[in-house]
Image 1 (cartoon, rainbow over the protein chains, first blue to last red):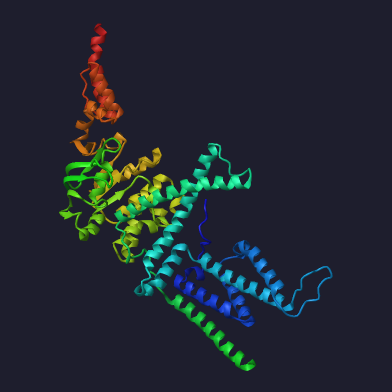
Image 2: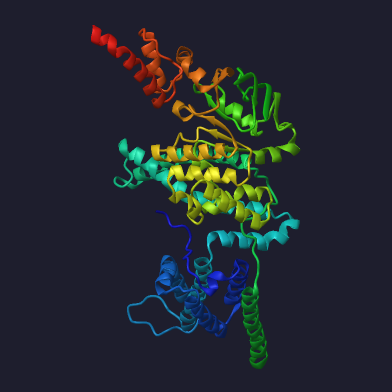
Length: 268
Length: 282
């Protein structure tokens, strides 16, 4: 069974919020994280850690979110450590490279930033179902329709792509089995041969996807699909808790902004 | 009423027409079966009924609206729903509920109305508790029921079924056919293409097509008792009908317009009890 997205169904305050509020907050937080200094990082860390139990998520969920990027983060840290100029850290005798305090500092700071970005994105996607996320995006993009952004069609495309991921994976598996049954080998043998064997999976897969797309277009047309304006099962509606959440978040951001101005003036 | 007049159609790049001068009337409330060998034009014909294929020669009218008129097409698609062979290629939503809401969303109905229609449609096909499931987690039979709910949520008067059971296992097939019966009983007109003759023995009329023409448009009993003609165009008849037909050809005076096992039992029983005293004498 294929798991789609990271959504973890729960009934929590965060799950119940309007997806637009969560999306907007995640975007603003990302900007603040990327622009912020060490004080900002500290309070955002505290804020996000507070959100985890509020969304009824636990450490296991968070570990699963971080695991795929750990290698990348490690690499990022070492690159900063090795290639930042500054005061050298006294090296151990056999080391050929010079490590700097500045490198250590920026490296740590950058991965901290990335961890925060991943944490906020994970809380968003774990507490919001793909359907809600898409309708939230669609709703936020709607004002841009005047500029020619086809928000309805974009939302339709994304949701259909997500809908067909498991179907196409099944299809791939079937083709693989059919070819294995006739003697194809995908798991052993020289790398080059395994690669060409994999390519032989792609041609029938693409062919079948094309045929599917054709049939699907016909089915959609027969159900009255037309580009542009349509209505939805749930029309998003902001209620009191959404406005409260927005207010709290806006206050926090306001404090951050004021704090920065004061600090900059005070020390600048 | 759907009225087809002198409809001919040739696919781009083909020389011979797939449909040749077809005329047909489909009254409201009827259950119409369509049979015919592969490539006889069944699918091409029904795809004209809701304007999926453009009418190039002839005329198709749904309740006096022409499928040639783009402004009527929208209303026609709402009135004439279509269910295709492969359920996987019809489902667009990430959840069952979202998929059933696709049609009503295209009709630009308000959200409360959509919610109401989705729940009603799912209940009618017996999937009331399936709303939150992901389509790929369902069996093919259930997927096809979701497709039927998707059509029902648009409140159609006609439902066209283009071999809806071709991809289903026996139990899925049974469930789909039960729903078809129920919808017909509620007054929805059914146009049902199939290769399984037993699926349409209960239909009001059966259309037999061959090489782009309608060669017969009759009650099932009349169509299926014409065994020689059906065999000539490469079609099967229900097994009981063929049994009676063979018995008759062997010189037994039995009826050949028999479609169900029950009828066949009664007919044979009558003959056997009639024959008993004779065999005692002999």
